[in-house]
Length: 273
Length: 268
Picture (cartoon, rainbow over the protein chains, first blue to last red):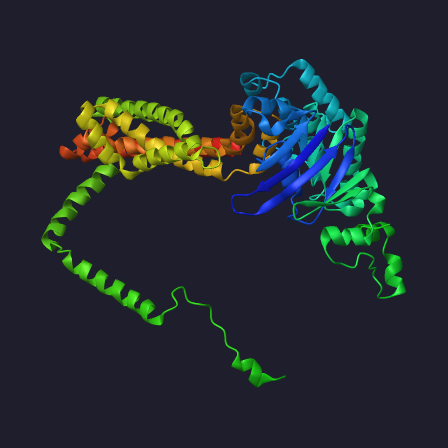
């Protein structure tokens, strides 16, 4: 489905973000990409759709070499890769519906998009997706009138309206509260399963990743240091990915404190159990 | 309490210029220059006294503005100014948008950026009156020279501010639009335009007022409009007519200001 081969990215400033990454994502697999800030997670998924131009290496999407494509062919390839962003990246002054329909920009011509005359089937599909993410009644609201969780659901609908084969998801929950984070992760994973989509999800929150994905890849300093099932993420593995830290530490200043602490919170802090 | 230790620590904000000598020298130097400069202005007090009379005649003219005796000239001048204002603003906006896009570093490749920035710099270097003198020399007296002058000035103003606003846009929505497979024009109309449109409308309306006011000034050097009428009124010592013209200009500018304020609030 997606295969990344010896991908290297060196920024003009001299920073090397990726040092020869090899990654294979089979069709329909939802995987999490974890690692410390600056490990190259965002760069990696942006190299896949070439929002960031890789320095060397290849990216194959369904057998097609994305890195070799010209401008028009690259736009066609991007239609098959839906992207979801950390700060939602909605166009705030446009309505919810316009934001969702912008997922069709790769398919419709300039004048159609300028006059907002999208094909009826696109509009119908947009309504269906808004129903699915429970935002149909907001379709004429401006995007900046929505809450964080609602905005991210608009972002998800926009990505899905592209009718993609794979989702590239960049820190979908970093701007959300813990409950909304779980809801958004659940929604993304459900939608992937419903539609048989593969997904690469960059995520800081190890505990959250473990709840929802089938495979975890750990990235450190531009190199893959872990690739396996989420339940094999032992303290040793976490140390390899993130560096030394006591991953099993609990609040131990007194029995009363410990009982107050709900179990979920501990999992979130330690990234374990 | 260890009062002695606490009192020993003193703090003052760091001065803007570290060297005390340089700081003092700059202040003294500026004061000396100001004193010398004032000394070179020779004031002819007798002439000032005479001028007070003329000033008073002007004030009296304002008290009794005469809209009637030159009403044909005034209305023709105002109409010509309005025509110049509207056409030059429209032409200016249409030319400014592509130049503004080219002058935004986050959109344009370096060569395009440099060319567009050079055009903006050239359009901003010269004051309207100087440009007007040049165009009057090229195309003769009349509103054509005025329209060209104001269009040129509008480009310098609007393209620069539009480019800066584009450079300040949030890159995330633009990136998201790019990720959908949008073309460059779609990136502009979905990712950039919604972010800059309120400001572009506000600036265009503001420029409309400026162009009207400037049309009165460049008329004095022969580029058409109400300025020419105003100049003639002063030349003939018809202060009452001049006052009428100035009051008309003030009324129009205030109306435009009020109207543009209303529109700007609507588009936010």
